[in-house]
Length: 338
Image (cartoon, rainbow, N blue to C red; front, side):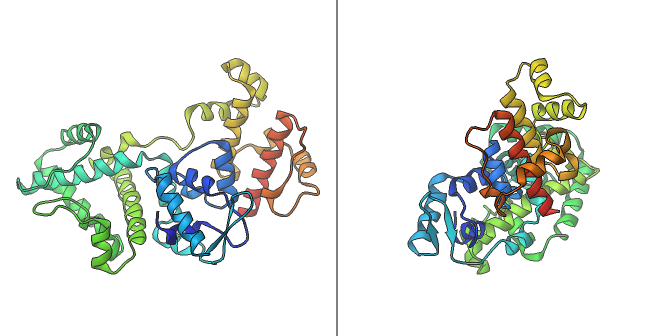
């Protein structure tokens, strides 16, 4: 990971745990990771870089520390010296595109995108001089199935639709998208080659390609042609099915104990389901009052510090008390966002 990108996920005012940032970017969905990603205002980056390695991330941290651009607190949290923030990141990868990564199996979506576009071009051009794309067998099978869904005339229409979509991208991003495709007499440019050719830092090239993959996925999903089928198998609902089931039962005014008994689940699992849904859903889509009413929220919030992440729950709190405490923190955080 490039240190210039990492420092944009840090703050000059709020010390942040590097492991939380890493786990958020790579898509780990424990309640703890999701809660702290919410506190860091990084939740929209969940699962955007699932293939990021810890060694690469740790190297970026060490580079920033050695350059004295961040301080390491006594508990290992990081505090930045630079107010770079994330507005620039938001212009390259808008929130609506980042949220797609929560539902996307990014690696296979990328593989199917590369192979699908190459195979379509090959079919239309009738050209055998294509460099082979190295992808998984699952990606190959999906592209084969996809090809059976349209004929030669429709293939040409798909190419035209793809070209029209490319014209909707900013010029540089369209150039990057096409340059990394593997086609006739063209093996595709690497990030470093594009960085040198365009005079743009490699981490920004990677960000643009991240945005491109999301934009292409949106194009496929919104299409009324065979494009819609290309990536469909590799997207899942934002909330896992067990979480959806627990949420649905809660909306029917079933209490947590009864939900757990009927489904053979521990109370702690039911609590985790509800906390996960509360964090990931918009505030008006989650029944906070059915989990912790307004009076309880006011009592829990009374006397707590202004920074919600610094609130303290009693050391001897029961599981139910901690559940309501954490739910109140989530509610308060989302109130400040609205």
